[in-house]
Image (cartoon, rainbow, N blue to C red; front, side, top):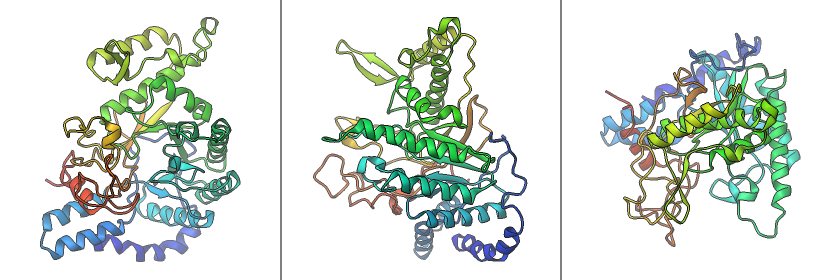
Length: 419
């Protein structure tokens, strides 16, 4: 099953010369909006999935082997995860060849921002702004006129250097540099040299920043010069909540940039309602997607947007949100922070299949951005470690294949992977 897909590698060599003689993305349009009929590309299987599938077959666990094999046939993103500019260009060329064979649109995640992940589990990235700019330039030049989706730097805006808790560091200067780095990437990918790219910026997820906090970050980064933003990458929030969160961000951007009626709305992102609601006399806030809150927020935007029309679009990562977020309180943890509800939570499942036909205004696509089966890191749930008490062992490093989690994601997929 999995071996059959590996056979595509040999086919790539057979078409490489032919593809070099014609535009790689033959038929690419100048429009950056994804048509509802868009077919997304399926990369070659992850090697961890291949090994796991073969091991399951060897142990006569054919049902689970079929689940892993089916998971690898679903479109997902290809991560340009550091390395040299030449390495990234090579990976882009390979992916474009595969997508050409499929007559499909590839999704790339550019993940090389300096100081990424606050030096945490997914630390790395370019060492300097000059290195980063060169990396972006190489990716852009290789993409050329290809039709593709670019998910630009997960966590880069939701996790600014000033959010990292650094001490003795000029985080304001680091934030300025971060915005400049993102700005260069936008200007490069949105240039006439790359007319077929749909570029999306980082908006975190609905259990992180509030709407009025995330919207100005996106605008300062340059979202109005792109196709839009993305939510829920590498997270587990339910799709319906992410769609509301993203819609309210777009509403907020339209509101705070409306110059009508004397410009009383301009810059007032802080007035925008969102998913956080006050509870109790202490003024604490909780994520609230109750119908009462949804109705109140929608009514507020309807009554205050004026003539402004929300136009900033977005995509949602549904790769691992089939069972929603982990209920850490039910698991006995005092808070999500201690439980690390974002880090290899148990009992999760694959989510909705990638599609550009969402039926939801402003939502361009549901995508599998995070690679299902890859670990989030060596989680310890607030213990001394190194064992993860939820999995009973040491979790693989971030980005490494996590067989137990991969199989659970496939088994608990919603909708199911197999009949």
